[in-house]
Each structure stands twice: as C-alpha cells, then as structure tokens.
Length: 160
Length: 82
Image 1 (cartoon, rainbow over the protein chains, first blue to last red):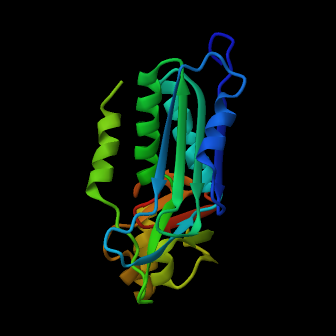
Image 2: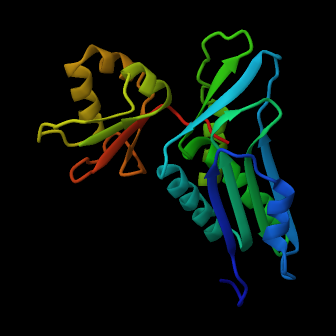
C-alpha cells in the first residue's frame, strides 16, 4: 500500500501459454495512478535451427516461493503499483513465450528498473532448469548457467 | 530426511527424491554432500564438479548452512530459468 493505492501482484507457474496483452490489460484496468508499465517477454530461441523444443523443469512450491521473495525485494526497492510474473514449465517450442514480467509504477524509471531486476533474479535464483531437445532426436543437453547471469545479479547487490 | 534432486543432478543420481536416515553428526550442507559422496560412487560422481546448489525447506542454502531440523533438502545445478 502506498498513499492509499493498491499494489496488485500476480505470480504464477503454468504449463499453458500466457497472453501478455491480456495480462497487461488486467494489471492496469480501472487504474488511473499507473503512469508506466514495462513488459518483458522471454522467448524460446533457436539460433542454430537445430532445436525442437526446450523442456523447463522446476522445483514445485519453491519456484513460487522464490518468485514471491524476488517480487517482495523489488517492491522494497521501487515504488511499484503492480507486478506480474508468469513462468512456464514443460515443453516449449522455438518462438513460444517462456516468461512474462510486468512492472507498473507511477513513473518509468521504477518500472524499467524493477522489470530488469526481476528478470536478472528470476534467471539465476528461481529454481527452473532448461533442457534442449534436438531436431535430429539426439539426447538433449541441459542449458548451462552463464557467468554473465551471475554478474548481472552482483550489479544489483551493490546498489542501495 | 527427505532429499530431492533436480535437472542434471536428478539424472546423474537416477532419483527424483528419497528418504534417508542421516547420521547425527552431519551438521551442514557440505557435510551432507561429503557423506552422500562417500557412501556411493554415483553420488560422488554427481557432486564431483562442485557446482551443486542446495535448498533447505525450499530456501536457498549455502554449503555451511546447518541442516538440523530440516524437513526437505534439495540439490540442483545452477538455475537456468527466465
């Protein structure tokens, strides 16, 4: 709660696709205090043309709890009016959406910063793992964590 | 104690979860990894790269975190969500 306004928060893990436009509309519907809404969608990418699908494994219960802890940390850092985090699991085809982050605030700076913060922490702290399935049917490899993702986290730990 | 494993660690160990009676002298996550690795070559192999992360009762835990009173301990590789 901030000056009598409400913070609307949605955190979900689901196997089905999400509708980013519908989620944005739901977050801002009936509100006149939100001046900035940043939307980030992470998609299943196939750079080499050899991927048939990504399989997303997660730690049930901990995934939702960790997403909520990351959201609470974002709320404590920026004056947010709304947050939506949806992460898919299971088999996801190239071009399909994997993750949605919406951050709403009165002004753009907080919304941009919170969305970036949420994605950086989701990548390296939320218990999800990606496995690749190849078009030629060969055994899939687990995607390895990147040093750059860990470095992205450290950047936030040095602020505030 | 309930132990759960995810992703590449689950595949290497060949189990998603198991109930194990732990010796009382195991104090930390690091102790537990050393004990599991010492009793079975499959676990030693799974933990050999020192990359395993842990969670105690669904919260991230460092190697020196005490395990006393835990209901569920999870082991998994570095996360790759998002």
